[in-house]
Image 1 (cartoon, rainbow, N blue to C red):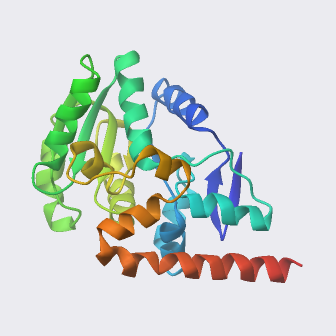
Image 2: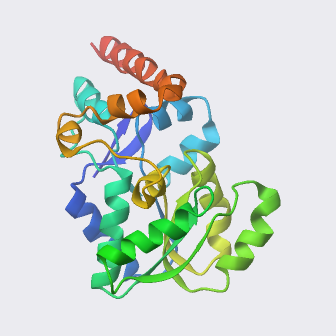
Length: 242
């Protein structure tokens, strides 16, 4: 079941339920895509009708962000748990290995996708990696990127171009590719590759991963400004509903 948070439709599913839905999707015909809204993405969509429409037409929309989970409760929306993009990528890789699907990693800087693929293979030796490619989200680069991707039959395409760019790229290009499921994962490949350090487990459990990121990457403060605005929009909705 999907519920709306500030006009963005998000599935009320657990991590395991989300993986099971992807498995069902992989068993069907057609092409599908997954999005992972967090407060920053939801705020961006308020001023971008195209982005909002893409998010709302996704086959699966996962609540990513402790702030989203907690604040949505103020307006009567409840999600069973946060599904972090990096965790879901690892879950998809496990699913792919178990049921003999392949994955392709697209995006990231330098050799991020390649190293992320190598790290996934270390943990999941039987995982099939269809390929990796840095690529770019700009339309001018699409010919090269599509040329690389069209050489493969891809079950799960993981795209790391950053929010907004990756979802628009997927929506624009999915129909041109032999891909069953595509998902935009933001900076997930940075963490899987080891390029960036993820917060310790106890920090994640305390829902303070955002603060950990801010401490080790102070430049993120500009991006974090979306959170106070998200709080404002949620409180505004709650007041008007009353």
